[in-house]
Image 1 (cartoon, rainbow, N blue to C red):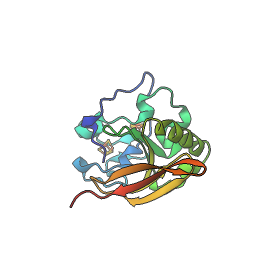
Image 2 (cartoon, rainbow, N blue to C red):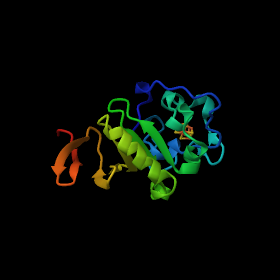
Image 3 (cartoon, rainbow, N blue to C red):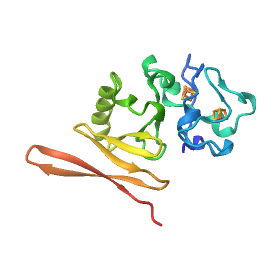
Length: 179
Ligand code: SF4
Ligand code: SF4
């Protein structure tokens, strides 16, 4: 679940959601009892939010990265890409929340190659690119993708560098939240 209260975001000039409502499907939105992977009951296909004027503050405050970052091209608009990009407000990891109805969308061109480029650039800052299909997480590393299974609230990603004959390799694992 995204907590928009932790994200200070404003749309970039010229950006608007238009008919996109993908964030109304891929995230939990407790204020309207919407569960990730199913459309919020207020979403109107091709039009937007059916309760726009009265939508919860949670929805009002949220803007995906395509909305805030002018340098993301039109191919990254979520209703076209079938994935919603956000930056984790704490870790600054790039989270890629994929439409579960098109779960393989992130592996298509031009997206997969760009995710790999971001993975390379992020590693230097000890940050990562994580693809989610509902709660299932896959870490995109420069040399491979690592499926970590279901991420529950509080679970963490831990990365370690391991030296090999070919050079350093990054290993990642999921650490469960304390019970
Ligand atoms: S995913 Fe982004 S562009 Fe689409 S409705 Fe949500 S904030 Fe708007
Ligand atoms: S209330 Fe409106 S903006 Fe919020 S998740 Fe539902 S459809 Fe989307």
